[in-house]
Image 1 (cartoon, rainbow, N blue to C red):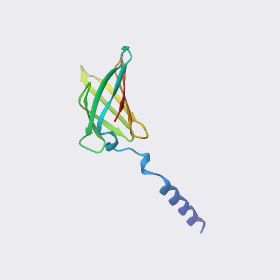
Image 2: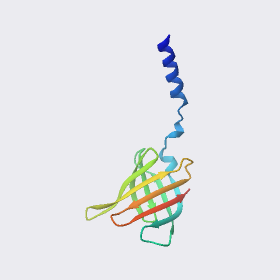
Image 3: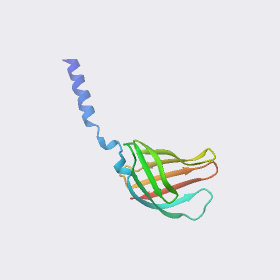
Image 4: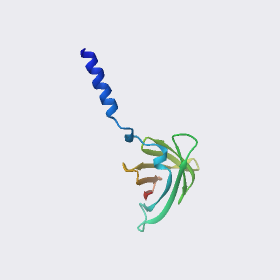
Length: 121
């Protein structure tokens, strides 16, 4: 009987976890608009970035602004990738989405400059 109580408790705890704690590609896809601010730039630039579904459940394709068919991987609620590779060096792309799925923050970094995209859907 004791082990049955533990099983029941475990089942209740598992059922109480919400699937909303995890992200999927649909939360990222769409048109995002906002400002870009870079380390060595004083005036923010307004841009739009379009995110579309990639070839699998963990790929997102980025277009618009500085992006042209950039493929990034979704790892739960984060995006990670490497942009254009020139002379063997790429630009690191990271991103996170807010818990209400309305704000996307992308950080695009090179060795000397990081740019932050603060975007809304």
